[in-house]
Image 1: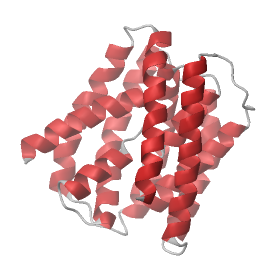
Image 2: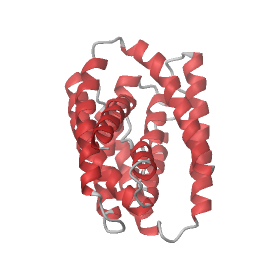
Image 3: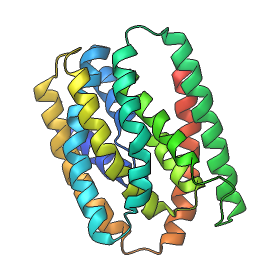
Image 4: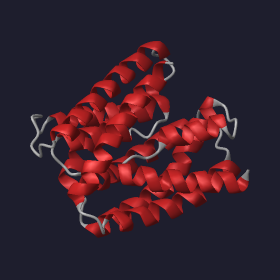
Length: 244
């Protein structure tokens, strides 16, 4: 089991850091489906596991010069308070209402991302201020469900015109702060499974450290052309998973 968790952590760490996410949904799937943790414990452990790899991956992205701090800071303006609000109301709002709302938004973002991928147009029809909306949605996902919130952040940055390496770097930077706040709140609601979390963390740290350096050797346009439709498909699948 230990070797399997380290290997899965490596795959998740390498994949999600290239996609600009924190990996919350992937870690939750492993922790609940394979490690058999309770949902509350899995949420806390997921954020604990993802945070160090996110920091390492963000630093690697920073070294490549792809990070756009202006976009990241705009995201955080609405994402940080939304994370706090989401954490405070997570036990009050109906789960069904939250689930369907997030699923619909993720589905729409996924379809828009796929359309932009196949059109291949570098320009965006979205207004710059819409980045605040994506930040708020990301914060709510972290605060309410213990997810990383990377999906809407990445989709928003891509739709606003950033290429895939830039969006991944900027997203990982913004998600560090959200993960810290989410971890603080969720650790009070569920116990962290330290052994399982540390095994996943070892693998994810290695994957997150290696992948940005690999991506830096490729043409950003080609990377975007390949990974952007993958991101769109993942958003659609995530939306479907929310309601089934």
